[in-house]
Amino acid sequence: MQLLAFLKYNKIEAEQLDLSIDLIDAVLSKEFLSEVLQSGSILSNGRSAAKGFVSKSGEYINLIEPVKQFLRGGDNTLSQRICTRNLLPEGNRFKQIEDLEWWFGSMGKTDMARHLATLFILDIADFIRENVCPHFGVTKYAERIALSLSTFTLLEEELNKEPNLVDRLMVSLLHKKVELCKPKIIGFTVPFPGNLYAALRCGKYLKENYPEIKIVIGGGYINTELRLLSDTSIFNYTDYIIFDDGERPLLRLVQYENDRRTPLIKTMINLNGEVRYFDGIDDDLKREEIPTPDYDGIEVGKYLSLMELPNPTHSLWSNGFWNKMQLARGCYWAKCAFCDTSLPYIANYQSHEASTIVDSMEMIIKQTGSSGFHFIDEAAPPALLRKLSEEIVKRGLTVSWWTNIRFEKSFTGELCQLMAKSGCIALTGGLEVASNRLLALMNKGVTVEQAAISCKNMQDAGIMVHTYLMYGFPTQTLQETIDSLEVVRQLFVNGLIQSGFWHRYAMTCHSPSGKSPEKFDVKRVSLKPNSFANNEVPYIENVKYDYERVGKGLEKSIYNYMHGVGLDEHVSEWFDCKVPPPIIPPNFIAMAIGCKRKR
Ligand code: SF4
Image 1 (spheres, rainbow, N blue to C red):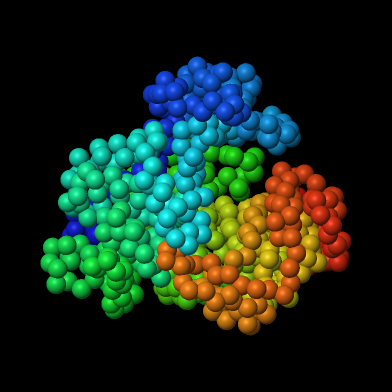
Image 2: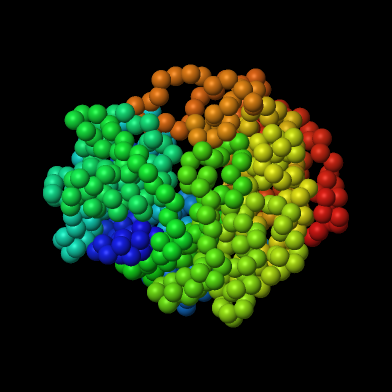
């Protein structure tokens, strides 16, 4: 949306397409499911998803369109029938259901139906993944192949296989768009590892069928992983790789295609069998050069409102369509030891004026018809959030919004009330290792006590909170990991957070910990750069415990806490290995916020 707006602003004719939404829509259709059943591609290895699907295929096929319609908010009348649990066939995903009445009560029928309909969709997605396309997912595609790819070989092997039914469907959707628009250049954004396979599969199709079209890829995954690329094989699927914000590099590239004397910037090409990177000077774009994102071509009505877990905060990410916008580029803090602080997407901070942002919000609402905004900032600055909220309230604009923040002391009760008044419904933020020693070591700039107070102010204002959590940070002991789980348990008990997610720490070459590992008491293993992806770096540490088993325990605990289960149990109950008891006092969080708060 941002790139489209920028290209149009610079008088370049351009169009956009959300191929992933179109693909999901086409896969989850009566026609495609019937085709799969007739194609004989179902593996006869007795996998459970296949057995369940095949025995009830008629029901799945008849119900898929009405369920999709319901999940798009188009036919709410179906909710009562879905909740009877006599309408939808129930496959493996339904085994996770515990107590629906407890979660949704007798009034929350629409949400309960949304949860059940999501499980129905996920059962179908499991079936497709097991029998048709191992890379398929409703929220991710081919993520596993592209995670930590030191060489291109594995991905190339996949790309050289015969395209499966889903691959063929994807390129047929692309083909239609190409025939309609007759583009000279096609760009694919690759924000996550899960997007790489699909982008290159499309690139392969274009190279074979439309050799005159130039292909370019960019986005978050490219920016962090491919900066040291030396293997040229990927250029069999793309002509250009562009880095960082992309606006200027893309504009130059378009000009370069018309006039080869135009210097490329932040662009990689294959020059006579060698990877060549053109850095060039790329000043930050001035505010006035960054137009309002353009949603032309995005079919808002096609997005599904999925609810995988009966947890309102957790479901925000998959909850239908949100207008995406950035309040500021980069991070105003840019100091955390595990973060890519040396890369422009974090380091180059530049904010917009609140009035300009609200002007853009009004324009986007007119374009999409939706008043929900997800501000996709790395960390939205509290001072800007204050001005933004004041501006929204002043204009009497009715919107809902959520964003990512740092749990810092500026989030006072008064600011949180103002933000809630302006439409803030949820905030997400990193509490990371939830240990004061480690938060200081990683330069997070917050303490656990401060974060708890911020969360209390948010909750008192009716704003939901999701936390990103981390384990395995250098020097973090098993005792500290158990203590951090105890902190998280107490945050749930006191109703300060609604959801969370544990990540295993990874040392990246763009982070302060990757650049100066000795400061974190670990030793980087020095290896030659990989020929393909280079982001995570191996290191030797002094403190070690069974990360795999401890990670599983942490995952299990948070899953249960999000369902309100096991909050009174001792934290060691979640592990299948011996762990020490926590030494954090049981009233640590209640003391920090000055009271005991009810969930
Ligand atoms: S982790 Fe978040 S707050 Fe820390 S530097 Fe990165 S973006 Fe900023």
